[in-house]
Length: 118
View 1 (cartoon, rainbow, N blue to C red):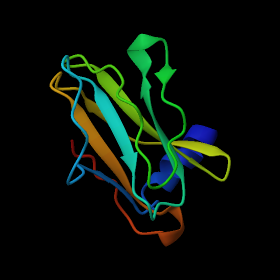
View 2: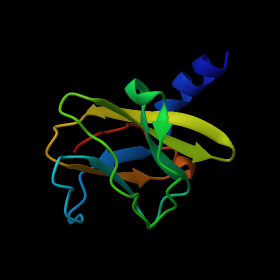
View 3: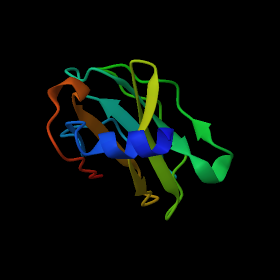
View 4: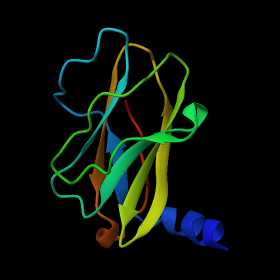
């Protein structure tokens, strides 16, 4: 039931994930970093399902995570935490050259669409 509700709600979230205009230098061996737009009304985190569900700490609006692993082809999931609920807002496959994504949008806006760009 929860998965159905979360899936149905995704279309109305009003969130986007886009490549940030400027990001800190990527680690030498690749990796991944998440930044949350300062106007967001949720925290977000990265999760690596193929590494036992390893996650970053919750990243607050206006902040960026530390660099985490990101081997070429590795699945990385972006989760949002809003009013106590955790929602999958997208995923990407690491390039192995350093990927930086930014979570943009607001749950409270109710606009459609989730975009993921790295």
